[in-house]
Amino acid sequence: MEETVMKFYESKRKLILLMVGCLLFVGAGGYFSYTLFQEGSILIALIMLLCGGFFLFILTMYAKKVATGHPHVTLTPEDLELYVLPTEKINIRWEDIEGFIPYRMHSNSFHGLVLKEEERYAKLMPNKMKKLSRMNVRMGYPQYNIVLSHLKQKNLLIEELEKRIVETHPSESSKTNGALK
Image (cartoon, rainbow, N blue to C red; front, side, top):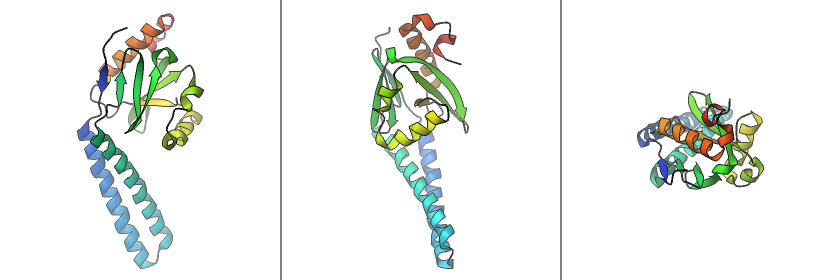
């Protein structure tokens, strides 16, 4: 296996554009909820306030990603480091990765990691992400996913994943270079 460490970062320009979009939705949610409260439409105003709060949460997540500057994925000789939250990473041993499943959802590309010991890695998931992770598993998607849509060098990452998974599991090389279909 290669002795190199490779880091894959998200495009800051895309993240900043998403932050601007979120900021617009937070402002619109706040403005419309205030206007609707004034008119007496409390239920719709609360819904708009919740929508604005949701986009505020997403905005803070993107802001943390930009501020911390951590890579989204790091490939080391021993493991794959995946930042599931802007400040929390999970180290997944190469031996525990059986393959990956490429899929698209709502115009976003993902590579779901198929793990041997999902229960062990489920315990490592940060509390903020456990509920979302359980929903992914119930819908048939893997617990840990690499979001490719915002990455700068997605093709290089896919090539490296294929190489490293095949090197770790040489008997599975017939599975389209590590990708499970």
